[in-house]
Length: 230
Image (cartoon, rainbow, N blue to C red):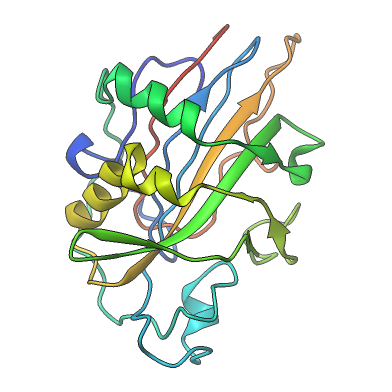
């Protein structure tokens, strides 16, 4: 991601649409350090928090464990452009917004990245109702081994993105992403803010251990917030 000046973002920023396998993902990335870095935010279609937890649809719909307060998933899928591939846009995110987001989210270690590009991360499960974001307390997710043969199959815990961040710079991304793809009310999103650091070497490092992700997203968007040395 570090080689391109383009900004990838959701909703109002014309996000990329990827015809993959399972829920929807929203990502916003950042670069920093002596090579580059990435901050990410992911979204998955989710359920109505008033329904009983642990429904039979919960595990197949999500590629990670969801909070107990998150119920059965909606059977509806958001409208998508079936022939869309990638959209690149420059300067989609104002500098002030990028700086505020960088300053407001403290990142913690991501042990799963020890064997490839070093990265720091923070996450938060949220739901959107009438344009209002509500945060959940769960601090981990679990990717299936069939999607991630390197670090899938077990819970991975991370630092939580502060709730107040969703009243500020991240709110526009998450609410806009939900509106752009027509997600039903009370859908659940996994938001990740991530920084990836690359060391200079003759061989280019990989942002992910297994190369291109196959998490099962139908929609994905990535916004580059900051880069250095890339």
